[in-house]
Length: 58
Image 1 (spheres, rainbow, N blue to C red):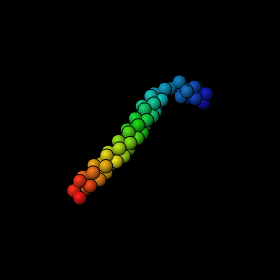
Image 2 (cartoon, one colour):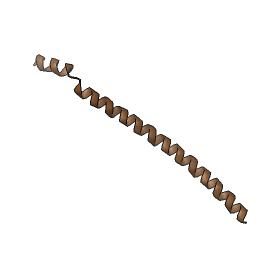
Image 3 (cartoon, rainbow, N blue to C red):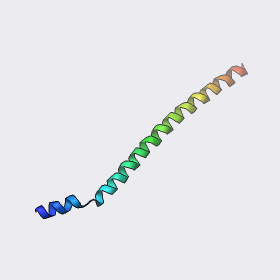
Image 4 (cartoon, rainbow, N blue to C red):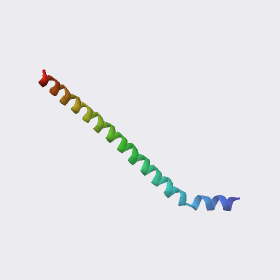
């Protein structure tokens, strides 16, 4: 039983897959955060332009 446990502790093949998964998750979080911030900024800009265009038509 100790040989199996020792061999399992030396095996690092699953660690690489977990690391890649964590990197992909962090990149996804960063992209979602950036897209949310960009979307909010664009929404504010379009609302500003809409208000200006509405005022100029009156």
